[in-house]
Image 1 (cartoon, rainbow, N blue to C red):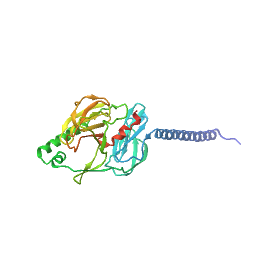
Image 2 (cartoon, rainbow, N blue to C red):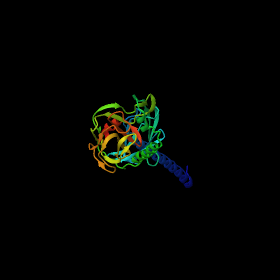
Image 3 (cartoon, rainbow, N blue to C red):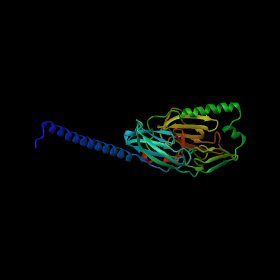
Image 4 (cartoon, one colour):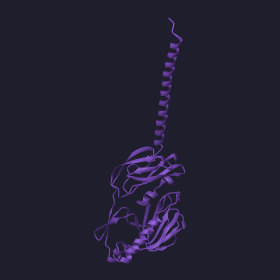
Amino acid sequence: MKISTDLTEKISTVIRGKVSIVARGLMISVFLMLVIGSLSATATEVEIDNLEPELGQLVIITAPYDLSEGEVIVNEENFPFRADEEGAVALLPISYWWNPGNYTLTIVDSQGRTWTKEELKVQQADFAESYLTVDEDQEEKVRPTDPEKQKRQQREQELVAEARAESAEERLWSSAFIWPLEGRITTDFGATRYHNEELANRHNGIDIAAPVGTSVVASNNGEVTLANDLLATGKTIIIDHGWNVFSSYLHLSKLKVEVGEKVEQGQVIGLVGETGFATGPHLHWSLSYNRIFLDPRDFVDLSEFN
């Protein structure tokens, strides 16, 4: 039986078309496998040092350089990745004002594409309670009723805000932070403060008791952005450490640095005092990231940067 030339060509065309469709299907399958494999690989390269942090703790996230302009999104807040020596790093501050519970942690790149999502289980912290008996003169320093003092307080709050408004783009420290002095801790980070039995605030740092005149050192390298005598916090120093990380030193008896001065870790910057709102000689030491106060111990334990 003879088959016409036209019919033969039609059959060949159909076969080639089917082969072409199969080939394209295989190519698409291989492409999707490569894409999915690539996404899985990049997701596994992201490391989150703590998925069950307590309120007030700092979480460190490391990732490939590809994410150096990406960000972390938690609780409707965005925190940037930054290029570092071995890839990208993001600091995630768990504010002590958040509610304990489960949060979705989303990591996106500079194009807004999601790399990975994780469940962040924020734990309640065992914060202490601090009770102070305060006389009228001391109370006037933190909640002034005098109009002139109220104006001064407003100006000083603006000074403090300005001191933390801008930060060096580069990381100014190369190792973990250190304690600014040795002494007895009288009020720990996060303590609920009561003045004369009335709720006042939450303690945003650590109070370290020491004799007046004891040397206070910079907890890490940085640049002084505030060195002034303020109504509530007395002689106060704020240091910018880059990446929006700031340390603060309150109630000093003497300032040994000036605004704009570059300081090195361990350098004496002031002396312990009891200026401002203080019921005895001590240093109030605090650390913040993106204007969120965190437990200073987490910065002392920054092994990722040693």
